[in-house]
Every structure is written in structure tokens, then in C-alpha cells.
Length: 383
Image (cartoon, rainbow, N blue to C red; front, top):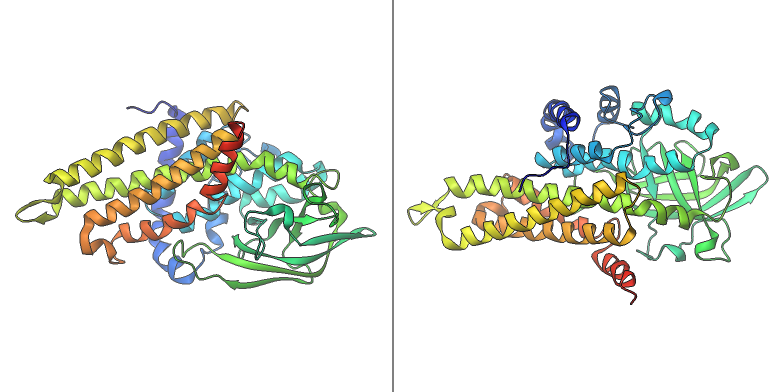
């Protein structure tokens, strides 16, 4: 079924971004996978070409366009070429962290931070997860205790995407450790602050081009002016307000990754022969491919409706959780079944399906695990 989400402006944008991906990402992807991080120049080049801060105000160098369809195009084109790891940093910067700055920053903070964010000179990250607590954010132990005109931050975060490259990190902290949800605030830490250290670039199963780090804070003095929002204790509410967009971003990438690996597998089974016939001619292959194509079609149309809802300011936490849960689980199933259709070759690193299989596994965990998504959906049912 034909998708009707995009208009001519989006397709023109897709053409431009596809050319950018082919020139600036594809030739370097293998090296970035070996390095465990993309070159910082990827962000500045993306910024110079207008692919960062599309929804940021024009006065700060942004596109001034409030339309998440452009963000969706970026995700789809990155996943089309299998650039899950190198592309995640860009989508995290645009889709997940920048919205916190656009919504909650004071005018002074916007003047200070947004020009660099839009140009790509200031790379963004967000730090929520801590060692040992997983999805239980209310139990975090990182504290930010006010001392005059500074907060003194102590604690640690882990699994932080863009953790090595980031210059500006939105950190979830406890400004009132005696409280759970109501004691949380969001504080912006900057590269170079004394006592702010980065641990090793974590070695992962997949997404090797994405720098993922441990962060530690030892008596880090952060100016009060770096509090996100105008008062303490609003961090949990801020996170809840922005998580639906984050989860939709992950769902878009999941559906796009599933489509890409299916397309690659279709080409493979039409050429690869077994017992004298193309692998794709066997009934088992036909049925498997038919099932996957149908499920991806359904996922794409649901996600498209979620994008429309987000643009209209109507995307709910439940609907975003459904999208994230279904699309990432689908991504994993499709990658697994497509690898099986490749036979032994699918297990070889030189075949894109093996990378797609490894890259897919984390998507059911980050941004809220599948189990947490089902909990959110269940609560929406009044359970």
C-alpha cells in the first residue's frame, strides 16, 4: 500500500540527504565501526548542509520548521544503507536531545547553546541511566546539591550515546535526594567542567560506530544557570513529556531497518541458488518473505499515523510505546529470519545482514525496554 505521509518538500529533502549519506557516511562507515565512534566532522558537515536543528528557530541558524517528517526521512535514509551506529548520533542529537533545549531553555540558554548545536560544533547527549538501576529512573543516585550560585554534582551514568563526542549533556539528577520523582531535575553539563570524567568507550555487540560511554561526576561545579527550566524538581515531568517523541524516533528507525534488511534479502534470494533453483523460489522462502513484507507494511503505516499525531501535538505515551515495542521487536524478527535465508553466508561479517542482526538487538532495550513499553500500554488499559 502506498504511503501518503510525505509531500514533495520531504522527497526533495530525501534526495538531498541521500546524496549526503552516500558522500559523507557510506565511505567512512567501516572505519568508524573499527574506531568505535564517528568523526566529529560528521556533525559539522551535517550542520553546514542544513541537516541539524531543522526545527530550531532561524535566528539560531535552524530551519524553523516544526515538522517531524523531515526527521523521519533522515532516519529512513540512514537505515537504508545500514548506518545504524553512525546515524544514531545524528538522530539522538536532532530527535531526542534538542527538543529538551527548544522547550525548556531560557532565552539566555538558547542564545548560549543553540547556534553551536545547529552548526554541529556542539554535540548533544542525554544521561539518564545509571549503573544498577536500569529503567528505574526515580531511584537514581546522582545528586546536584546547590551551593550558592552553583550545583555540586556527584554520581555516575552509563550507556550514554554520544558519550565520548558530546559537548553538552542533559543530565538527570536529584536536586532533592529525599524525594523520588519530585526530587529530579535536568542539569546541563558541559565539556571541560572540572570533575566531569568520561570512562572507556564501551565495547558492544553491535552499533560499533556509535560511541557509548560511562560518565562520572566528582564534585562538579555547574552554574545554577545550567538548570533546564525555571525551577527544580521538574525533571521527571520533562522526561515524561519528551519520551513519546524519543520512542517514535526509535520506532521509525526500527521499521526502516526492517525494510532495508528485507530489501537486501529479496535481492539475495533471487540470485542465490540451492538445488538448482533460486532460494527465493522455495515455498518456505516465499511465505517468510510475504509475512515480513506484510508486517513491515503495517508497521510503516502505524508509524506514519504516529508522526501525524506528533505534528498535531496529539501523540500519546501509549501510542508511542506501541510503536516502539512493535517496530523494534519486528526489526529483530526480520533481521533473524533474513539471516536464516542467507544460510551460512548470513553469519559472515562481510554480508550486511549480519551487521543488521547485531545492530538490531539493542533497540528493544534503549529508550525503554519492550517490557516497560508493555507496562505503559497496560496502564493505558486501566490495568
